[in-house]
Length: 285
Ligand SMILES: [Zn+2]
Ligand SMILES: [Zn+2]
Image 1 (cartoon, rainbow, N blue to C red):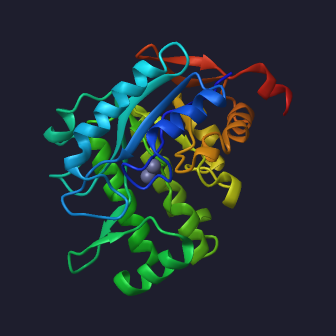
Image 2 (image 1 turned 90 degrees about the vertical axis):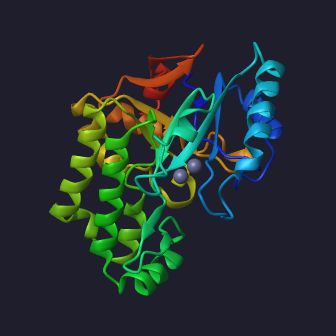
Protein backbone atom coordinates (compact mmCIF):
# COMPACT_ATOMS: atom_id res chain seq x y z
CA UNK A 1 0.00 0.00 0.00
CA UNK A 2 2.97 2.33 -0.61
CA UNK A 3 3.43 2.74 3.13
CA UNK A 4 7.10 3.70 2.98
CA UNK A 5 9.28 6.64 3.92
CA UNK A 6 12.97 7.04 3.17
CA UNK A 7 13.62 10.55 4.49
CA UNK A 8 13.42 11.09 8.25
CA UNK A 9 15.20 12.68 11.16
CA UNK A 10 15.68 11.76 14.83
CA UNK A 11 17.62 13.08 17.82
CA UNK A 12 20.96 12.37 16.12
CA UNK A 13 20.20 15.64 14.27
CA UNK A 14 17.16 17.91 14.65
CA UNK A 15 14.43 15.26 14.89
CA UNK A 16 12.25 15.44 17.99
CA UNK A 17 12.33 11.79 19.13
CA UNK A 18 14.93 9.06 19.25
CA UNK A 19 15.46 6.48 16.54
CA UNK A 20 13.78 3.66 18.51
CA UNK A 21 10.62 5.75 18.93
CA UNK A 22 10.42 6.43 15.19
CA UNK A 23 10.94 2.73 14.45
CA UNK A 24 8.12 1.86 16.84
CA UNK A 25 5.80 4.36 15.15
CA UNK A 26 6.76 3.07 11.72
CA UNK A 27 5.70 -0.42 12.73
CA UNK A 28 2.54 0.79 14.48
CA UNK A 29 1.54 2.73 11.34
CA UNK A 30 2.05 -0.32 9.16
CA UNK A 31 5.11 0.89 7.25
CA UNK A 32 6.80 -1.77 5.16
CA UNK A 33 10.04 0.23 4.86
CA UNK A 34 11.40 3.21 6.74
CA UNK A 35 14.72 5.00 6.23
CA UNK A 36 16.64 7.21 8.64
CA UNK A 37 18.44 10.11 6.99
CA UNK A 38 19.89 12.41 9.63
CA UNK A 39 21.42 15.67 8.47
CA UNK A 40 25.02 14.74 7.72
CA UNK A 41 27.80 16.60 9.55
CA UNK A 42 29.06 19.89 8.14
CA UNK A 43 32.63 21.14 8.68
CA UNK A 44 31.26 23.47 11.37
CA UNK A 45 28.71 22.88 14.14
CA UNK A 46 25.04 23.72 13.63
CA UNK A 47 21.88 23.17 15.65
CA UNK A 48 20.45 20.85 12.98
CA UNK A 49 23.27 18.58 11.75
CA UNK A 50 24.82 15.48 13.29
CA UNK A 51 28.31 15.69 14.74
CA UNK A 52 30.99 13.39 13.32
CA UNK A 53 31.72 11.88 16.70
CA UNK A 54 28.18 10.47 16.80
CA UNK A 55 28.38 8.71 13.44
CA UNK A 56 29.51 5.35 14.83
CA UNK A 57 26.67 5.37 17.37
CA UNK A 58 24.20 6.39 14.65
CA UNK A 59 25.13 3.45 12.46
CA UNK A 60 25.34 1.02 15.40
CA UNK A 61 21.90 2.02 16.69
CA UNK A 62 20.49 1.65 13.17
CA UNK A 63 21.97 -1.83 12.85
CA UNK A 64 20.57 -2.79 16.26
CA UNK A 65 17.08 -1.62 15.26
CA UNK A 66 17.32 -3.30 11.85
CA UNK A 67 17.79 -6.61 13.64
CA UNK A 68 15.17 -5.79 16.28
CA UNK A 69 12.51 -5.10 13.61
CA UNK A 70 13.52 -7.79 11.13
CA UNK A 71 10.40 -9.26 9.56
CA UNK A 72 8.24 -6.36 10.80
CA UNK A 73 9.60 -3.20 9.13
CA UNK A 74 12.58 -2.91 6.82
CA UNK A 75 14.76 -0.18 8.30
CA UNK A 76 17.37 1.60 6.19
CA UNK A 77 20.50 3.58 6.99
CA UNK A 78 20.95 6.81 5.08
CA UNK A 79 22.03 10.42 5.42
CA UNK A 80 20.68 13.67 4.04
CA UNK A 81 23.88 15.28 2.85
CA UNK A 82 24.20 18.98 2.09
CA UNK A 83 25.88 20.43 -0.91
CA UNK A 84 28.04 23.00 0.92
CA UNK A 85 30.72 23.49 -1.76
CA UNK A 86 32.86 21.44 -4.13
CA UNK A 87 34.82 19.99 -1.20
CA UNK A 88 31.93 19.14 1.11
CA UNK A 89 28.98 17.47 -0.59
CA UNK A 90 27.40 14.03 -1.06
CA UNK A 91 30.31 12.89 -3.27
CA UNK A 92 32.94 13.65 -0.60
CA UNK A 93 35.04 10.59 0.13
CA UNK A 94 34.23 10.64 3.88
CA UNK A 95 30.54 10.26 3.09
CA UNK A 96 31.16 7.68 0.37
CA UNK A 97 33.21 5.60 2.84
CA UNK A 98 30.25 5.16 5.20
CA UNK A 99 28.23 1.98 5.09
CA UNK A 100 24.84 3.38 4.05
CA UNK A 101 21.92 1.96 2.09
CA UNK A 102 21.48 5.18 0.08
CA UNK A 103 22.14 8.92 0.27
CA UNK A 104 19.89 11.95 -0.17
CA UNK A 105 21.40 15.11 -1.66
CA UNK A 106 19.89 18.42 -0.52
CA UNK A 107 20.58 22.13 -0.65
CA UNK A 108 19.85 24.16 2.49
CA UNK A 109 22.79 26.56 2.52
CA UNK A 110 23.79 29.60 0.49
CA UNK A 111 26.78 31.95 0.43
CA UNK A 112 26.40 35.71 0.69
CA UNK A 113 28.66 38.16 -1.18
CA UNK A 114 31.08 38.27 1.77
CA UNK A 115 31.53 34.51 1.63
CA UNK A 116 29.48 33.79 4.75
CA UNK A 117 27.49 30.56 4.81
CA UNK A 118 23.82 31.47 5.17
CA UNK A 119 20.97 29.14 6.06
CA UNK A 120 18.52 29.39 3.16
CA UNK A 121 16.02 26.88 4.52
CA UNK A 122 14.00 28.89 7.04
CA UNK A 123 10.39 29.70 7.95
CA UNK A 124 9.10 32.40 5.56
CA UNK A 125 9.47 35.47 7.86
CA UNK A 126 13.05 34.51 8.77
CA UNK A 127 13.81 33.76 5.13
CA UNK A 128 12.61 37.28 4.20
CA UNK A 129 14.88 38.78 6.86
CA UNK A 130 17.80 36.71 5.54
CA UNK A 131 17.22 37.92 1.96
CA UNK A 132 17.24 41.55 3.14
CA UNK A 133 20.23 41.17 5.45
CA UNK A 134 22.50 39.05 3.30
CA UNK A 135 21.33 39.67 -0.28
CA UNK A 136 20.05 43.29 -0.16
CA UNK A 137 16.57 42.04 -0.96
CA UNK A 138 17.62 40.49 -4.28
CA UNK A 139 15.31 37.47 -4.25
CA UNK A 140 16.18 36.60 -7.85
CA UNK A 141 19.84 36.26 -6.91
CA UNK A 142 18.89 34.00 -4.00
CA UNK A 143 16.72 31.76 -6.15
CA UNK A 144 19.32 31.57 -8.90
CA UNK A 145 22.08 30.70 -6.46
CA UNK A 146 19.87 28.02 -4.93
CA UNK A 147 19.39 26.35 -8.32
CA UNK A 148 23.02 26.83 -9.38
CA UNK A 149 24.07 24.99 -6.25
CA UNK A 150 21.46 22.27 -6.72
CA UNK A 151 22.64 21.78 -10.31
CA UNK A 152 26.26 21.57 -9.21
CA UNK A 153 25.26 18.92 -6.66
CA UNK A 154 23.70 16.88 -9.48
CA UNK A 155 26.96 17.08 -11.44
CA UNK A 156 29.09 15.94 -8.52
CA UNK A 157 26.81 13.02 -7.66
CA UNK A 158 27.37 10.58 -4.82
CA UNK A 159 23.70 10.27 -3.90
CA UNK A 160 20.56 8.56 -5.23
CA UNK A 161 17.61 10.74 -4.13
CA UNK A 162 17.28 14.43 -4.97
CA UNK A 163 15.91 15.87 -1.71
CA UNK A 164 13.04 18.41 -1.76
CA UNK A 165 13.79 19.93 -5.17
CA UNK A 166 12.68 23.56 -5.48
CA UNK A 167 12.09 23.85 -1.75
CA UNK A 168 12.84 27.55 -2.12
CA UNK A 169 9.59 28.07 -4.04
CA UNK A 170 7.33 28.55 -1.02
CA UNK A 171 9.57 31.20 0.55
CA UNK A 172 10.31 32.90 -2.77
CA UNK A 173 6.59 33.19 -3.45
CA UNK A 174 5.97 34.49 0.08
CA UNK A 175 8.67 37.12 -0.42
CA UNK A 176 7.69 38.09 -3.96
CA UNK A 177 4.16 37.00 -4.97
CA UNK A 178 3.87 35.37 -8.42
CA UNK A 179 7.64 35.00 -8.80
CA UNK A 180 7.20 31.25 -9.26
CA UNK A 181 4.93 31.86 -12.27
CA UNK A 182 7.53 33.94 -14.08
CA UNK A 183 8.99 32.19 -17.11
CA UNK A 184 12.61 32.37 -15.99
CA UNK A 185 11.63 30.68 -12.73
CA UNK A 186 9.64 27.92 -14.44
CA UNK A 187 12.49 27.37 -16.91
CA UNK A 188 14.97 27.04 -14.09
CA UNK A 189 12.90 24.46 -12.20
CA UNK A 190 12.23 22.48 -15.36
CA UNK A 191 15.89 22.49 -16.42
CA UNK A 192 16.92 21.32 -12.95
CA UNK A 193 14.36 18.50 -12.82
CA UNK A 194 15.12 17.42 -16.39
CA UNK A 195 18.84 17.23 -15.63
CA UNK A 196 18.18 15.24 -12.45
CA UNK A 197 16.04 12.74 -14.35
CA UNK A 198 18.53 12.55 -17.21
CA UNK A 199 21.25 11.65 -14.72
CA UNK A 200 19.12 8.91 -13.19
CA UNK A 201 18.35 10.35 -9.76
CA UNK A 202 15.15 9.49 -7.96
CA UNK A 203 13.08 12.63 -7.51
CA UNK A 204 11.74 12.97 -4.00
CA UNK A 205 8.19 14.19 -3.54
CA UNK A 206 8.67 15.77 -0.13
CA UNK A 207 5.44 15.95 1.86
CA UNK A 208 6.83 17.51 5.05
CA UNK A 209 4.99 20.83 4.73
CA UNK A 210 1.80 19.59 3.10
CA UNK A 211 -0.38 19.56 6.22
CA UNK A 212 0.79 23.02 7.32
CA UNK A 213 1.35 24.87 4.05
CA UNK A 214 -0.44 22.79 1.42
CA UNK A 215 2.66 22.37 -0.75
CA UNK A 216 4.94 19.57 -1.86
CA UNK A 217 8.60 19.97 -2.85
CA UNK A 218 8.73 20.04 -5.81
CA UNK A 219 5.36 21.72 -6.28
CA UNK A 220 2.62 19.49 -7.72
CA UNK A 221 2.46 21.91 -10.65
CA UNK A 222 5.55 20.01 -11.91
CA UNK A 223 4.23 16.47 -11.42
CA UNK A 224 2.96 16.06 -14.99
CA UNK A 225 6.22 17.53 -16.29
CA UNK A 226 8.09 14.92 -14.23
CA UNK A 227 5.83 12.19 -15.54
CA UNK A 228 6.48 13.26 -19.15
CA UNK A 229 10.22 13.09 -18.42
CA UNK A 230 9.85 9.50 -17.24
CA UNK A 231 10.95 10.43 -13.72
CA UNK A 232 11.08 7.83 -10.95
CA UNK A 233 9.60 9.47 -7.85
CA UNK A 234 9.90 8.59 -4.16
CA UNK A 235 7.28 9.93 -1.73
CA UNK A 236 8.96 10.97 1.54
CA UNK A 237 7.61 12.76 4.61
CA UNK A 238 10.97 14.13 5.86
CA UNK A 239 9.47 13.61 9.33
CA UNK A 240 11.01 15.25 12.38
CA UNK A 241 8.13 14.17 14.67
CA UNK A 242 6.86 10.57 15.10
CA UNK A 243 3.23 11.55 14.49
CA UNK A 244 4.18 13.06 11.14
CA UNK A 245 5.77 10.06 9.47
CA UNK A 246 2.86 9.70 7.05
CA UNK A 247 1.70 13.30 6.77
CA UNK A 248 0.85 14.32 3.22
CA UNK A 249 1.50 10.82 1.95
CA UNK A 250 -1.96 9.94 0.60
CA UNK A 251 -2.40 13.42 -0.87
CA UNK A 252 0.92 13.11 -2.69
CA UNK A 253 0.02 9.69 -4.11
CA UNK A 254 -3.31 11.08 -5.29
CA UNK A 255 -1.67 14.10 -6.91
CA UNK A 256 0.87 11.83 -8.62
CA UNK A 257 -1.93 9.60 -9.92
CA UNK A 258 -3.73 12.62 -11.29
CA UNK A 259 -0.55 13.70 -13.05
CA UNK A 260 -0.33 10.31 -14.79
CA UNK A 261 1.98 8.36 -12.51
CA UNK A 262 1.05 4.72 -12.00
CA UNK A 263 4.14 3.79 -9.95
CA UNK A 264 6.42 5.12 -7.25
CA UNK A 265 9.95 3.95 -6.48
CA UNK A 266 10.39 1.95 -3.28
CA UNK A 267 13.35 0.25 -1.67
CA UNK A 268 12.63 -3.29 -0.52
CA UNK A 269 15.08 -6.04 0.37
CA UNK A 270 17.87 -3.65 -0.52
CA UNK A 271 16.67 -3.10 -4.09
CA UNK A 272 14.84 -0.16 -5.65
CA UNK A 273 11.86 -1.03 -7.80
CA UNK A 274 8.80 0.65 -9.29
CA UNK A 275 5.75 -0.26 -7.24
CA UNK A 276 2.19 0.41 -8.45
CA UNK A 277 0.33 3.16 -6.63
CA UNK A 278 -2.27 1.25 -4.62
CA UNK A 279 -5.74 1.16 -6.20
CA UNK A 280 -7.47 2.52 -3.07
CA UNK A 281 -5.63 5.77 -3.63
CA UNK A 282 -6.99 6.09 -7.17
CA UNK A 283 -10.53 5.37 -5.95
CA UNK A 284 -10.36 8.46 -3.79
CA UNK A 285 -9.74 10.72 -6.78
ZN1 LIG B 1 16.30 18.90 3.96
ZN1 LIG C 1 15.29 16.28 5.84
